[in-house]
Image 1 (spheres, rainbow, N blue to C red):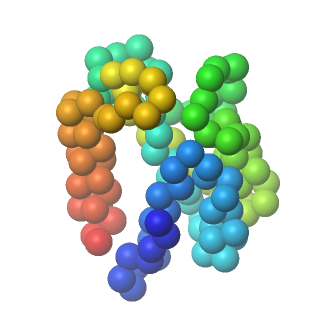
Image 2 (image 1 turned 60 degrees about the vertical axis):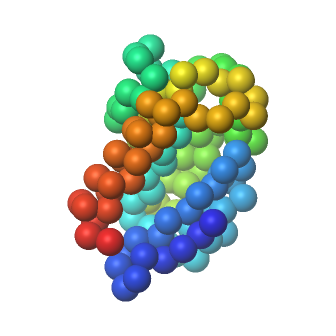
Image 3 (image 1 turned 30 degrees about the vertical axis):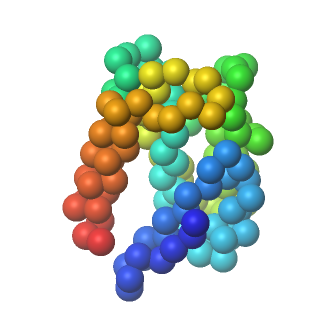
Length: 121
């Protein structure tokens, strides 16, 4: 899903497991800042929210994305000249096709509500 937030300079993209597939929409929008939100191994209880440096996510790991986020972020910085920030949410687990745990859903809602209030949309 890709959508503009009313008349604000905000574009929301739900990129799923293939965020590289939305780079065309991002190029057209020409953002100064891209905020990535994803599950992240924070070694904390499920639902913990943390700011991460995307450059530090270069370790080899099993990912559910077509490309690791650091590769996508580097591409966006290089091609669009934008800044990248990353919010990680600690999942309960990472088994394929498993629904999100209640504490993770609460964290997702908290991030969304905070962004909505901060960005006034």
